[in-house]
Amino acid sequence: MAAPIDVDVVDLSDEEEGPPKPPAPPTAQALRSAVIAELEGRDLASVSLKTLRRSLEARFGLVVGAFDARRDEIKATAQETVGGRGRPGAAGSRERHGG
Image (cartoon, rainbow, N blue to C red):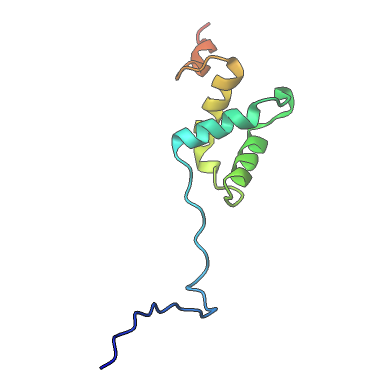
């Protein structure tokens, strides 16, 4: 009797199992780090929040509009970065209400 042969079976077919999945959205910390990196060294007077969101979407390989729902999160991080505050809640502290 011959000894059994160990064989690994590999599927070599070219058929794909449906369309590729889009990348997962980044965590809050990953997004925050990316906002800071995107703003570093840029002329802040010429960067709009929409342009920033589109740059971030491209950076993470997401479709255009993917960060529209996270607009406030990106805005707050950008304001903290531009203001040089670096602490949560500081961006809106300059606004005063009253008459």
